[in-house]
Length: 618
Picture (tube, rainbow, N blue to C red):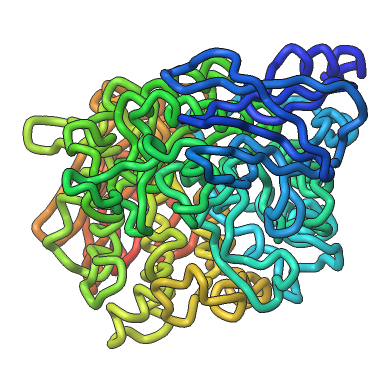
């Protein structure tokens, strides 16, 4: 339903995006900053200095504030903190925009950055129905064959005449997961042709990355262009997930959080050394009330101001459990369908005690989902080495794959995983880190002919997309994207990471197979059950000694088949098996799929090697 301009403005004004920081609305500028142990605080706006006054205490930290009237939209500023005779100049950590390379903060009247017809997107996709697609804004749009001449990666992504969004629509994904969009330091906004990074080195947590903008010097343009990208995806029914990195920062000794909170922002080991559970030199002290509230406020800001529908948490075990519980509670108040998931591990030994880390099991009473690394490794083998997975016949991974196929729930007394319900499991075979699926199969199966390696790519995706839980696809997996064997390509540049859109044409059979599996999954509730009881009630398992795993799924809803058989043959030879009584419609076999059916079968049926067979009853 279209809202009138009056209704839209009322809806927007009813939500306060940020309470701290440099906030401008109409003609009133409010500066409210939490700062630890400062003697004086000043704000310099376009060269004019204005003192702040100490106005109280919050979380045992001083609150400094001031107000001005006038026209401040797009003016630059810097904060000066005087402490023990030293003058520290910094952007405030709550800043909403900056100029090029974040040298100065930029004041914005945020309503003036809204695109035309900017309205909230009501994502009605239940968590069990989600199909996730991970992409990097630059990787996805930089290829010459992408089809856009627009300047700025945000703009190229929004361009409906280019290949990106139409591809996602046709593929059938429900949520687009974008690698970090918030300001990071490793790419020079003025030299984007010669600098590259995925963005896991965060600097300002509420500012869109300048290198994705058509004009990073203009602080309003990057905000508007990111909103336009989100709007283009929403207009086409695709929800947006942000990859967020609140576990550490770049440049920790000069970082705004350290300038404002020199004693409490970062964790330290018992020895007094800085914590390094991130593997990046520091880790944020999420358990401190000031940092916890900063993170929650930042997430609420992205949710409300940019209409973001979900968040993926990098190294989620570096967050203390209470912070994650409060994050879910606060974000669901605004959007009950917000999708929250992350990595249930750290990047090293954390200064946060293990019992407080948000590890597997801590999600039990929540709807927060975890990446299922056991299922991933069971399907394809180790991340970067030569070890084969079950798709290539490694029988030692059979139990891990079977658990994952059932959503990693407690299915029975001998088959039990980490999840209370399947919606807590993010199922994947590759992500931005490590070898992509095609390269992993190339490395671990060098003795296979090329056609059989393609067969294993299809097999991996058919296991993934027919399993309970939330499927997650990394960019280009659906048409055999390769990173040329690079396993750690976060800074490897466009030549390694860019998505080649010619590959979609060259591997149309692979793409069509993946697309139609998604369509089948979305059409049948048997592939996407919401809770463990439904799986136990509607699913039967059959196994044999020849690395054959089958699931029988009962239909319950209007439009469901009465029965679905999914049989995975993890052997390097064909197997003939007897089907349950009755006539079955063959839907998929040997890497081919036809949603209208390939014919009727009954009795004995030959299951092709290294592939999935799907049969249904009306």
